Amino acid sequence: MLLDSFAWLEYFMGTQRGEKVKRLVDDDMQLYTSPIVIAEVYSKSLRTDKKAEERNNFIMKRCAMITLDEHIAIEAAKIHAENKKKVSDFGLADAFILASARNRKIKGMTGDVHFKDFEDAVLL
Image (cartoon, rainbow, N blue to C red; front, side, top):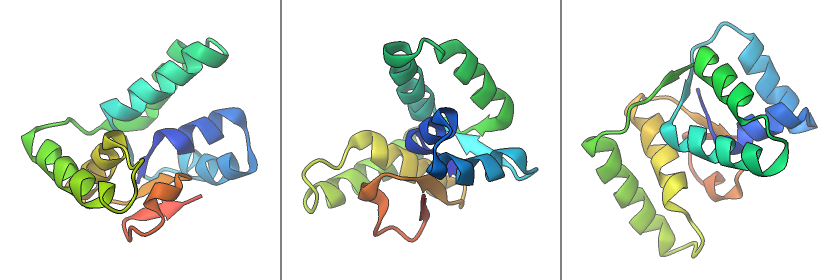
């Protein structure tokens, strides 16, 4: 399972949605992250509670990093181009998360409504 930024932030805030994420984090299942997730969580943490480094260290200890490469970039571009036609604020970062998960043949966990129509996304 790839936990996206939304999922990690819910986890760190201790919300009800974050409890679902906590069950995965506390389990032995392999979790994945992306450089995009690291950047988003780190930025949000710098702007809010200054726990960026602590959170980054935790994510990196718990997750395997999916390295971005040409194949993921092209898949992200295709996902972005297709979905941007339907949803004007569909972000390229969202497309990278989905492409990264697909590259590993895993699902992505998120609370982001942009992922509601994707079979390979698990909504919180």
